[in-house]
Amino acid sequence: MTDTKNIMNDGTHGIPGTQPDQSVNRMTIYCEPITHLGRKWIKLDIADEIPMAEIKKRLPSLHWRAGSQEGLMPWRDNWLAYLQAKLDGLAEVTDAPPPGRRAKRSADGPRTDGRKRRRSSSQSPALPPEYLEQLRQRNYSEATIRVYVSHFNLLLAHTGHRPPQELGPAEIKAYLEYLSGEKGVSGSYRNQAMSAIKFYFEQVLTPAREI
Image 1 (cartoon, helix red, strand yellow):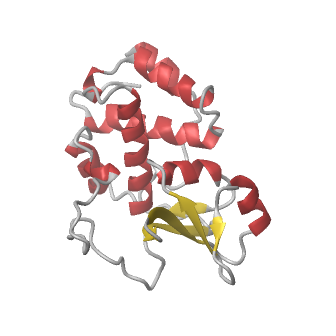
Image 2: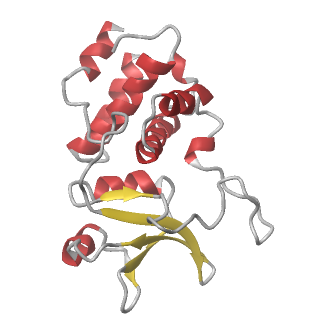
């Protein structure tokens, strides 16, 4: 895997919040999926300190609730990673409930409308269970775990949900080039994706691969 090392070990993969118990002093936007008027949306609770003009510039499809700091974004798959990329450098985006407010229901709780719940990114059948276990054993924050799981699932989806241990330098390089080229993501977003992939190969896979 020496080629993989050349791809990923460029000294830019470290990002705030990726180490256990590391705090980041950034403004936070709290998000949650909701159903409104029969449609699925992502609700954003935006702090007063965050400039609204910049939010509107980066998220032109956002619908604003009159007299509030709440916005509604039309549903899209992998919405958390999308928002993190769009608002990179402006605010931290999380799907955790705001401080002082409990989640409306647990991740595994039943729906009240009788329909089956969509699988969350952390419940994807392709995600190795050891990936999530190792993140939690190393005391990574819940926000970082969500980011890592989201990025790793995006890689798996891009490669057709092949077993991740079968992926090699060519697939990883192609995915990173896809992010930078076709998707046009920020450097910070790409670095987060690299860190999520690096964690799997170095901390989860047995035997570990040096990358």
